Length: 96
Image (tube, rainbow, N blue to C red):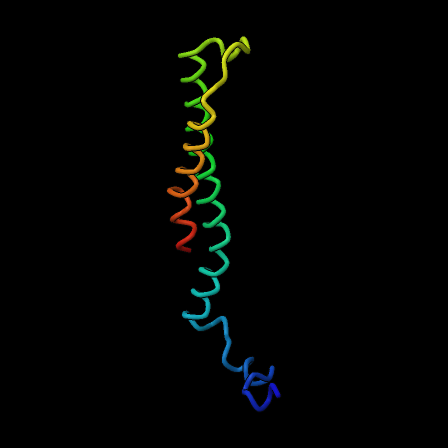
C-alpha cells in the first residue's frame, strides 16, 4: 500500500535532505514552535496572576474586614479578571 501511494521509505529518503535550506529552515522553525507556545502561555499566566494579586490587594486595602473574616471579598471581580485575561492573553498562542 505504501509503495503504491508513493509513501515508501526509499522514495521519502531521497526527497528529504538536511542540506536543502528549505528543509533545514522548516526543521528549525518546527522545533522552535513548542518553546514559543510555552513562552507565550507562561507570560499570559503571569500577567493574569499579577492582575489577580492587584485585585486582592485592592480589596484588602479598601475593606480590612476581609482579613479579619468579618466581610466577604468580591469573588466576582477575581473571576472577571481571570476570564478576561484568559480570553485576551491566549489569542497569540492560539494563533500558533
